[in-house]
Length: 80
Image (cartoon, rainbow, N blue to C red):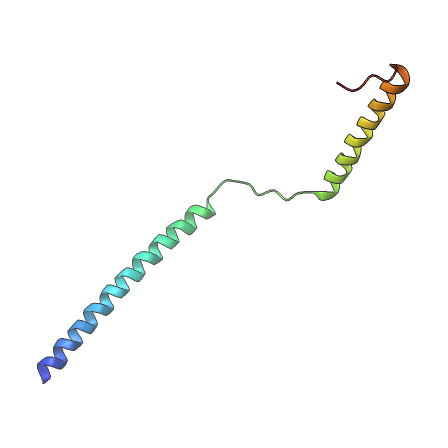
């Protein structure tokens, strides 16, 4: 009976060691990935919606002004 208990204990310890080893390996991979992501040199930009709206209004105003000039001074030729 004692040998069965000792054998079961050895098997349990071996399984636990394998699980610890597997977990350590996964942890090392994740830490390496974290370091790689921290050193990434890609900048992240935040969009300025106020400036974007102003530029959209400027573009539309410029198009409308161009259309007005073509109609009034060039006899209604279409923008080409």
